[in-house]
Length: 126
Image (tube, rainbow, N blue to C red; front, side):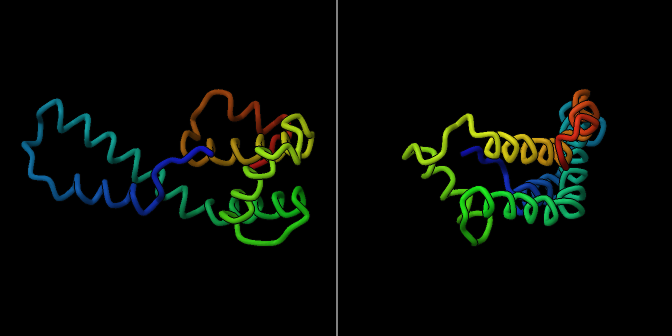
């Protein structure tokens, strides 16, 4: 299972940077300011799109597994089902779910990624 910083962890890191006393104008501060600005943009996109993308992923997982539950529970269940061999890694519905989930996350994390427009125009989701 892939994990990355949660929105709360990202917000905490940005707040810590903002509270840091540094000398404006030095190269390190300029770089870290750009990183913080990118993190703020990710947080804004997460706030705007995250709930919808999670609801869509939850619905796909529910259909795939024939179960109900929240995203975390169903995602964990999918991992366990794959480990047990209950779903083939080449199952078309699984691959469609993984593709749509990845495209949605790219739209939040890296919306200027060169391949995102191609993925979206090919009917990949998000």
